[in-house]
Image (cartoon, rainbow, N blue to C red; front, side, top):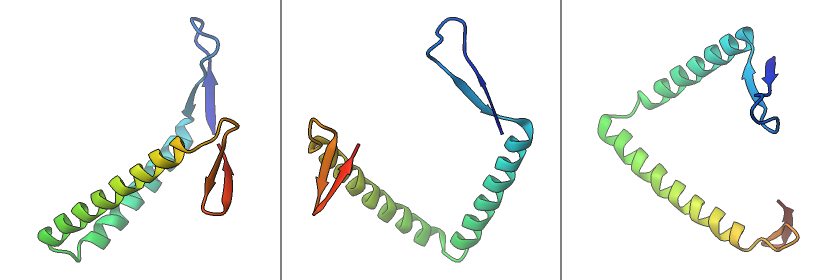
Length: 89
């Protein structure tokens, strides 16, 4: 699956990398995902694709602002209250 190595200069660090067979599997999956997304976007014109990107960026900015706000409201014990649910970080 993966190989782990520790550099002699800093034993706290662990380098992890996929084995050759897992890397090949990952690349096949990534390529299949890319082809799938291209097929989905292929039904849109270039203008429609640009509009979609603008909308995704707007959603992503709002999402990051929400994450920042939530991380600022995390208590000193690592808990974060969102709505009526309590989350541990």
